[in-house]
Image (cartoon, rainbow, N blue to C red; front, side, top):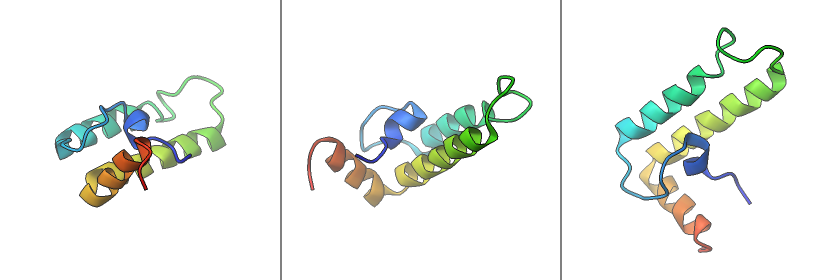
Length: 78
């Protein structure tokens, strides 16, 4: 199963998400990956994967069609 973009950004699974809420959630989570803020010994490859997942989730939730497809998929639809 594909990753859950709502879970990735810590947002509720609903269609009517304001773009500002998506942006705020993204910025909050991506800031935690900054090298100056990341916990010591963070694996650079893992940090890159997490940043990519956040970028993908943001793009998916900001696009209404992709957001609807994600919701359908999460609920067992086509």
